[in-house]
Image (cartoon, rainbow, N blue to C red; front, side):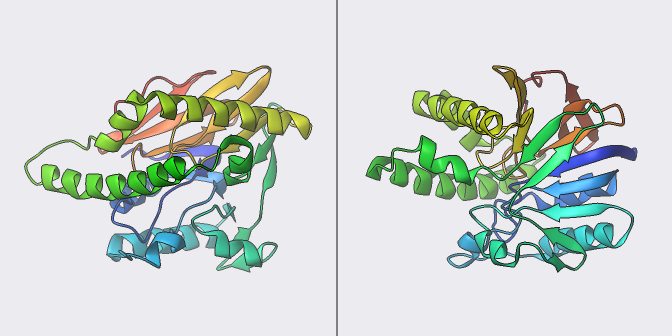
Length: 261
């Protein structure tokens, strides 16, 4: 993979410690990319799921080692914990192995845009209805993603490409579409209310880059279903990066091209 350098890189929802994490792919991605600043936007290590069903293999450990090595160099690495690694919020304001821990961050792009960076779970109370059906759906989705990972590993043995069933099912459900729409609009409104030009988040496992009523909304996606990251180039242009084993595909502009995961 050809090495590429960016001004800023955002990654989230890796879920190390679970069978669903695409750790080997992320390691390959990190080997072929560099940045002045890397924001880890939550759910990097899934401490929540590890309490129930831990799965932390060599690839997972190598990813953590790689991030620590990057932080030891000239790259600033900032970790913004999410709802699956919420325990790290207790040490916000400190450093772990050279990685800064922060509840949220403000980023100024090369074009002068002020971006609010947060995982996104802080918006849940404004979006979710808290019904039993919704809680059941969330639990069922977690199990589906893990089963999906096992199925795709089986397909890979016979030359099959990574094709997450969970993503296809999720995007066929009207309720999922509506939830994603509410999340995106709420995130943009929240950033606007705090005086920012845009917001960068993760949390919902749906990569996106577009403008919502004059506010830049960017979601860096995940490394369970989509294998994506958000990047800023030297000119301040934001783009979604889609990992493929034979290289990294970038999409620029207000809306990223559809994913062919």
